[in-house]
Length: 135
Image (cartoon, rainbow, N blue to C red; front, side, top):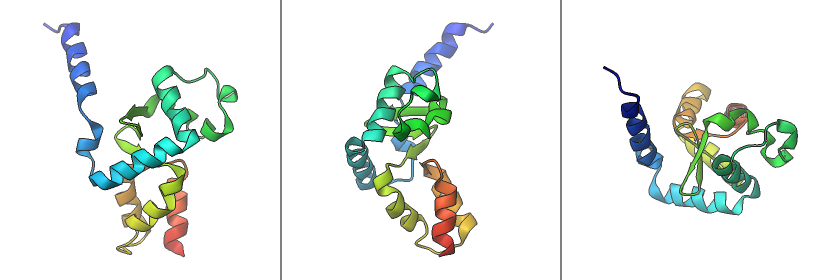
């Protein structure tokens, strides 16, 4: 017989698992993402909303965070890093650098996108990577 308390126990255990332990991102990169996230006002606003709850409508969200509103139910935060599901939300200041890193092997658009999508996220990421690879 199924006991609802068992499912809640599993959820609590899952919440305790560090997302960063499953990512293919080096510790120094995680530290840089933490530092840049702490210095980024819009990322700090997203951290606040993720922890305290989002406004009820997008109209009540400052422009700097509006692009994340549609993802609000998929966002979490841990150790100062915002995640969309299991992918790191990259602060604006690191997006160009990380785009260059995932494209360093010059494997083309689809391979570069696949690599980026495995661990990273920001609104408009696919379009930005496609543009960078095409240049």
